[in-house]
Image 1: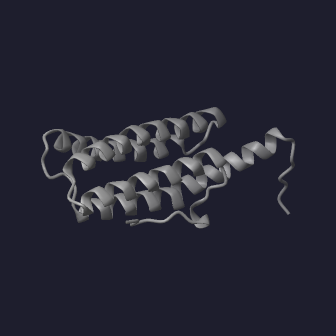
Image 2 (image 1 turned 180 degrees about the vertical axis):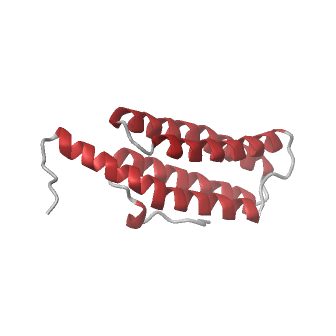
Length: 143
């Protein structure tokens, strides 16, 4: 059961990052399915996958930001850090086999991810596109 769908409005224009965002959405959907089926073991497994993949993805974005000298990199990274803090707390609960997943969590995950992609990552996508244009020698002159 999907609680969130990928669509073109979420594309930031960077194929690698867009693919990773699709994977994050898929993991959230898998987590929701495990929750809906009441399978605690699967919940813990998928939550760990989500945690690991999120760390990987954030690392990729942060490397791109550092590579282009992205001016908003530190605030973008802080958003990542706050998200990871919340996932850390969930991981601790999951390890203790406590009830770590609920509707509030899914609402937060979905809202955070959609907001982060549609606002913060869109700005990064624009900066990456500008950088690519400069690398290829394309002029972006104001009219």
